[in-house]
Image (cartoon, rainbow, N blue to C red; front, top):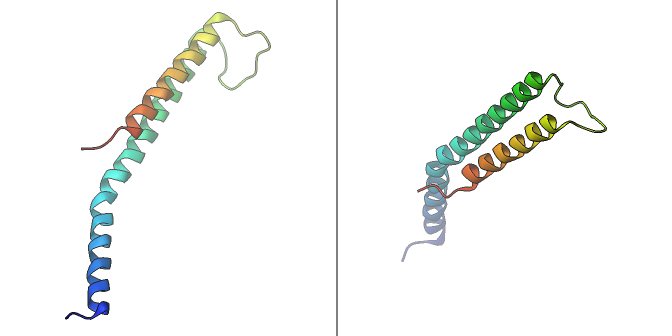
Length: 89
């Protein structure tokens, strides 16, 4: 009969191997999510600039174009979240 020390080391090694094998996938998801968010930020900044406004400045009564930029930004961020949370085959 094997000792518990040998068995626990084998189990630990298997768990460590599983974690290491999944690490590239997890890292790739986080990197792609970050790239997606950066793309959303770049697009909303371009949208604000094209409309003649600065992104991040509070406006009391924002015009429709600013609201459209905000809406597009929210849609883009939601799409990034869906991609990041999607199951990886």
